[in-house]
Length: 497
Image (cartoon, rainbow, N blue to C red; front, side, top):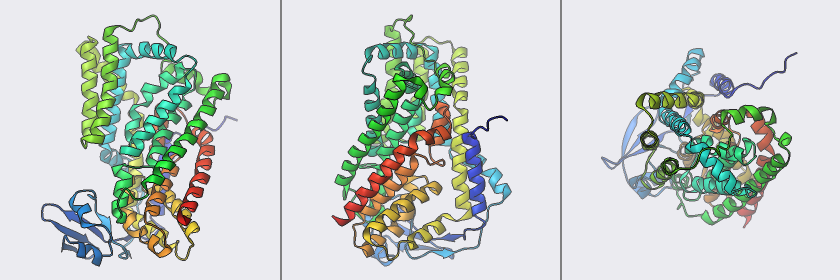
């Protein structure tokens, strides 16, 4: 009897999309009224089932609607998405999603996710071009020799730097660009591919989980909860430091075990295939010439420019994609690659990441099924009702699990914040705790589940590294359990201080 293989990432997501479509036949459809600010007319638009109403953009209007958010948060643009209005939920006519909607969902998701998909494809082209020049292999050889005996420094640096990016400006989708670059370096250091995967993905998860200045998480959630984003920031910094330390120690422990005995690797059966795919060779025969150094500098500068643009210049996917495209062209010119060869190599490199792009589109399609079936608000409504009458400790941990569960259906941090904070943050007032604790529960719940959330970025990341979801779960579940216990302990202590 043949051994049954674990399904591919694409198949897993298609199954989930089907289950969500079935869910729309059993979960009642419902909607909260929404409120959006119109900067051109300085008015609010309240959208309900029956009508759309224009309201004065005043603090009194917000107070009347039960929204405890300062008016300046809307005017300044801190809150740019429509928010849910508390106590306005009502059931609507059911909109179950049938087989046609299910079939259309991946295509709609690919169209809606075109921004990140094009980023991934252009990065693939750039990787193809730099590999063609041999600059990358030569640079890896130099780095491997330089860090000989101190390879664990790579783990500390990569995990820490990505965690800093996650906590400050929400470094998440952008990390997809780092896998093809860093995996060969870690392989040259005699680690397996699980180690760079963990450093990059876990670094991003723990950083965004403990967001401090992240505008797409901590700031927008605090604004939507009606509090200053600096409220509770000290606790989040402490959580960031301790959480990152736990993650680094966990990764180093696994990495050192694999380095001593490669058969201890969870993906040992894929060792040869992965090394062949990522070109694990130290190309000592080619000297690191001035031209190759210049190519590597331009290559790394693309990421520096991307990070600066996202964090300081309000860049998003279009600008990031252009940065990598310009970088690829510049490297082609410096490397003296002929025009026909450049196009062929670039297209082949982009094609290598086409599977990742399809995964991103299917995941977006799941969200589309939920929105079209109008069950997101219903899940939020019932979640808010489950916390009635709880004491502080039980309440805050219940919120942690509620946010973890909701993030399966709403993986967007900013989308989750504007949808849930106006509804769930007032519950803190009745329990007698600060609203910043709801913000913490939101961040920690979403962040913890992101380690394994199949509707998030993990399946796209695994597709690049050629690692199965089952093997990732085997690696990461013990860490998730450790972090979950630690987080519950911190939240429980916090509400009684």
